[in-house]
Length: 449
Image (tube, rainbow, N blue to C red; front, side, top):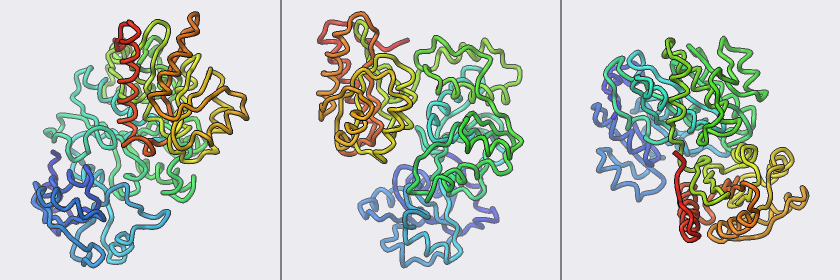
């Protein structure tokens, strides 16, 4: 757990109580860390069922947060999923701001507590954040520098271990929602991977979304930008920064890091590691890449039999996130569908990235909407409706092409909530189905080592 005790006497807090509103996993982590530091903690949530867990963590439950006196607080730690500005601010936000009470995130607390203690690498962007965060931490550990990844990936920032001063590095994935609630936090090394349309409903416009990402770079000590989109170019032109889109280290022959998008992720990790370890040898970096286990649900090789490989890319919940997978593999038997965030984006996805698709197996709520664009681009498809049917049908079709290496790709380009609890459950079920098929077919199911 991160030690927040130094914040008790900080000018911003001055020992005054703090409220945590929105009791998910990050909210509970904030309650625990604040209580351990000696703060008086109030807590609330629109869901009253969160009360028991919150009180067990040590907070005083506020049944009606809209009637609370926010002038008595030093801050409200707001869950990132709660609307701050768009489409409509949560009523608590307006009440707290009118009372002069700052709205912050758990990442803000984490950053303030670490100032001057241990380096923080902050990684943001629309796509690739999780892979780059995990990869960077992995490489640093392989090269002898103790590092831990967290934030918007894995453990919540405040649940990470507190290193002794100067004894470790924090590699933190940061979402735009979290940045919006970080008025003071700035990483020691800031990485921007790309900016493409996403979360427009939460930021009002593409320009608003890009502006939030750019805020993390205000006064950045060392910044790395890998994206070639217009927003990244504009930000790079305004900063004294390192712009890197490739690396001197070969990136071929890395099955867990295949594709051009991963080459940029690797380039970002290289720039960070070179900054922290100026004596690092390229051969050491390459060896560390080879030992990276990859991330579940992100172009994960789930199983294979003969010439058919099953790829779990369930984390791709929008067309932009699916595009890299469609560019990476050939002879793709693509499983797509779920709840579409913006169905029209499939038009661009297919026109720019559809050349490797052999056939599409549609599932979920968005199936008919996606089908219209598949017809427009003359890409063959049919309705599988459910994931288990789609995996079996995709395998049967791919296996019937014995002379071609084929890929059964789950990269839905849609959210999962119509048929699954989350994208992790969707990916886990896909993996189980793929392994069941390969076992039944008498093949040797294996993970790629």
